[in-house]
Image 1 (spheres, rainbow, N blue to C red):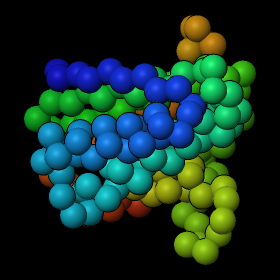
Image 2 (cartoon, rainbow, N blue to C red):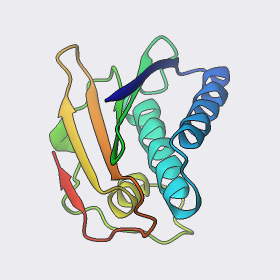
Image 3 (cartoon, one colour):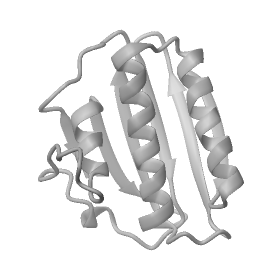
Image 4 (cartoon, helix red, strand yellow):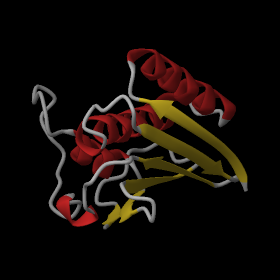
Length: 148
């Protein structure tokens, strides 16, 4: 299994570096079209949630992003250093949302566009959100699996 581990502080310059890294990873995985859209959107939403809700926008805290992949699957773990609990994230009842909704869309997007989502506490504190995709599947999946 291939792996790339990155860490970002919650400052504006690191957001630019984060987005550049996500697009570079999409290129490395040869993602295009819907598959690329799903990948970038989900990782961006999870990273934003880690920054806003997990680390509470604290620039002294770090967000770790771990990409793992083989020829058929991709897993991305996004880890925050916050005080949140996995049971505070309601994956089971999250649904797709209207495009004009200004907040609270992240989990709905993740559930709609990832093949599987898992949220668990980290031993070091904070949460780890793991997002999974099957490679070569260019059709958005509805009714996917989510677990806390």
